[in-house]
Amino acid sequence: MGVTIHYKGNLNSVDDIGSFCEEIEDIAKSMGWKYNSFDLDEKDNTPVKGLFIGPHSKAEMLQLMFDKNGFLRNALMFEHFPHDKKITYLNHFKTQFAPVEIHVAVINLLKYKQ
Image 1 (cartoon, one colour):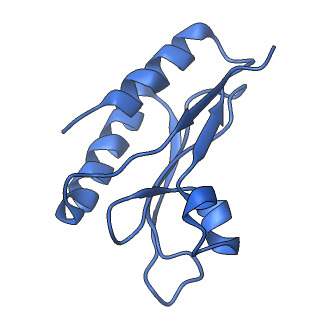
Image 2 (tube, helix red, strand yellow):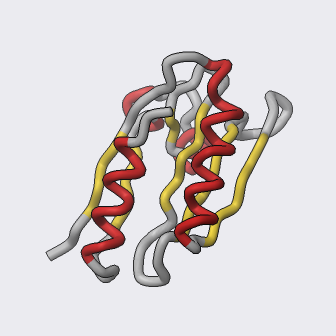
């Protein structure tokens, strides 16, 4: 049986994008998770800011990518379908083969509020 977390959301203010991403990066560091941060502007194909986080080698990469309006976007889908909000606002993350602690930690991270 597969275990997949589906999520979507937005920040209360677009002014929070930078500080929120920095805080999430600090959390990833403290947890010992691998991560890559991105800050892509309007001239790029995918104008988003955020992080890809690898909490475990047996889990997918968690993506927390925000558009200029502060909405979480699925970066891959956003690159190919930038105007289709039904597709690009939906994110997913598989934890099927990772320990249950990773699943719980990711759920807690997604519930995190500044």
